[in-house]
Image (cartoon, rainbow, N blue to C red; front, side, top):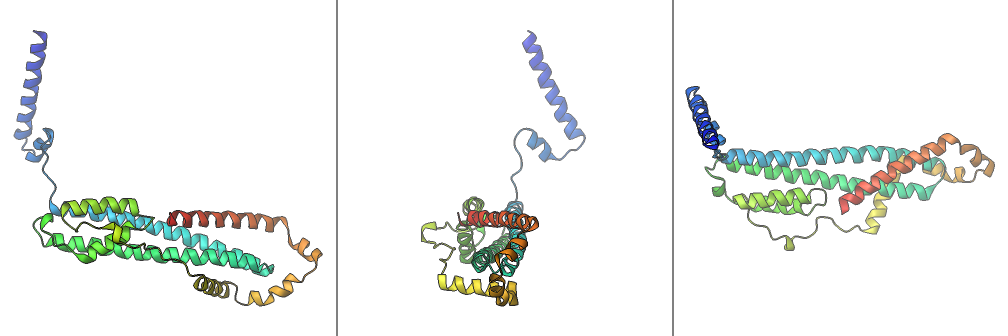
Length: 252
């Protein structure tokens, strides 16, 4: 009997609550949500959500670019210090790190361009179509997405987005096996040429005075190796390791 009274009270409470909703002229969709019958999102809302997620990826890439550029400025200072001490091998190693970081940044800018292209395509097509499934498929959009899913820095998120876009009919299904890697092989001659350009850019005339610096006596070198230089070298090494770790993460 007690259970029956509780059940009747619960039913009465639900009935009174629903009457209150309609009496206050609440939107009907609120009542629909109450019973798990929420109104499906419109095509424009769906596309807007996809574009928002792609813009988040673009902002993440911007943060990575700024971080690499900050590390590059520190490495340039290390190159100048090494050139002043006549350490040519160290200069070349550091210059190589700058070359690789600039290639990574260039690839990131290209990635942002592909993301912007896909977002613009979806906005334009969704604004002229009544349903997402009726949106025309674009070869250019598929190629851009194929480029993005093969990039280490955004592969996981772009694969998820591509599956959703394919399921919605925005793009055609991709055949990832036929897509070549977007990371080109590094040519040693070209790499050496880029290293020389970086050295000329950073140290300019300092290298021409390097042999004279290298011929200094042992006492002069010992006097130059102060505690401040050791601290600076340790900081530069830490910055260099951070840049290497970031570049290695982008290659994986």
